[in-house]
Image 1 (tube, protein in one colour):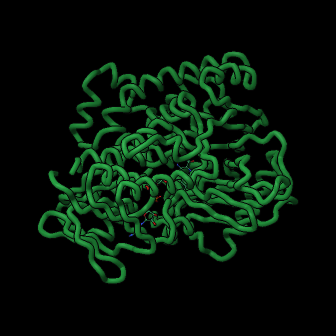
Image 2 (cartoon, rainbow, N blue to C red):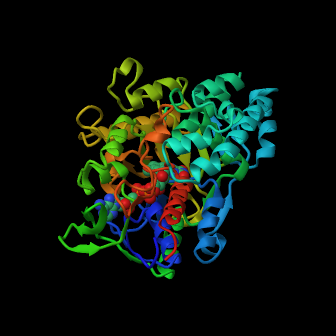
Image 3 (tube, protein in one colour):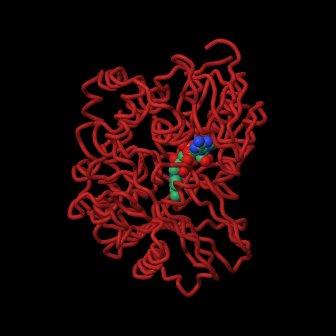
Length: 503
Ligand SMILES: Cc1cc2nc3c(=O)[nH]c(=O)nc-3n(C[C@H](O)[C@H](O)[C@H](O)COP(=O)(O)OP(=O)(O)OC[C@H]3O[C@@H](n4cnc5c(N)ncnc54)[C@H](O)[C@@H]3O)c2cc1C
């Protein structure tokens, strides 16, 4: 579009903020409207008694995507936040008791696997990552960095039969693992990457093998001071480029005039005219509520009902006395039966369509060694996350059931103890955050972490595109193309800025 556009961005999650920074830098007049009192959305921050926690993301991958955003809007990322590459990247403890510290640099990974799992494990993983690297080369530009254009996107991806064979869209991540990995612990390791998009490895496509490739090739990173700093830095950048950010301002509806957007209606009844609306709100909430239904949006709404929503998470914020020597920044404690976890979360197998909290879940602990997060040097603040079914009082779990969150928190602490991380007598206090809390705080429907999951070969194409079928309306963020997780959310903003164009 030519000329300066009046742009309203709904939501100050990382997606909305990145879009605001880019569109302001392109010369448009941008206002961001955020319902809550703080920016960042899922990139939340919680402090109490000197303990401080990131309440959402704890891992930054693909830092180049963030660098591109900062370079395009006025100056390097490293001037705005302090990024630290983690080494080791993750400490794993498997169901059989094996321990594995995965180094933070790809070259060192195979030897570490050989040492922890036995000779040959490194070669198996290396072969898998070689295939994943080839998948990445094929899909990064036409899929992740381009707007989703249905059949045209498919045709571009399917141009070369060799590429199709490499990406193997018919194969699941589990199936790919079975082909390359003989060691059952490596298969579990690969399966876990399906959860980075809130999915089940038995149904998610093989191309998700690009996730461990990207993580190990380009590193696992932490933002000193907490990952929420990233959202604040992007907000600051947007303001520097002229954007206005209003918190405490919920948007009730996106208004149309004829076939294009004309304004947004605020919860207090006010209106703001707009040439362009960029929605960073959950796509399901946009199409089911904010945007009155019409013939034009029917196909997208149908796609959303066909897709499986992503899993959610149950979080414990643990204020601990004392320190844990030798603990990695990230630790993952696997159960003996990983499939039972996916069955419980998605209500498959013996659960016959009824999800439930996982009795014996994989436990993820993020324990940053960062003075900002603790009241003194003899304390720690742990973010503990387990996969959980979304909030669904009608057909699944109602996380608001009195007592459920506390009982489940006790169970998670017990599981940690059973697997060698017993901190029960060190807990100063524990705050729980359920899928219902996540839904309330960020407007994510059911508390899904990543919008729709990647379950099923067509899932990526059921996710709403960045250009809505209403002129002037665009979608950013984890529930639209190309999907959830910080780097993809930032890529969605780059795609939207490209679609809107310079003033
Ligand atoms: C527990 C947890 C752990 C995670 N771990 C990682 C990780 O380690 N690494 C990683 O890369 N990703 C991780 N993620 C995913 C990542 O946080 C998200 O993909 C990303 O932050 C989503 O950004 P977003 O802008 O799409 O949406 P959100 O952050 O959800 O932002 C949407 C914003 O819109 C606002 N909003 C909604 N509706 C309205 C309305 N009507 N009016 C005004 N404002 C509105 C909301 O209040 C919110 O601020 C994690 C997420 C969670 C919850």
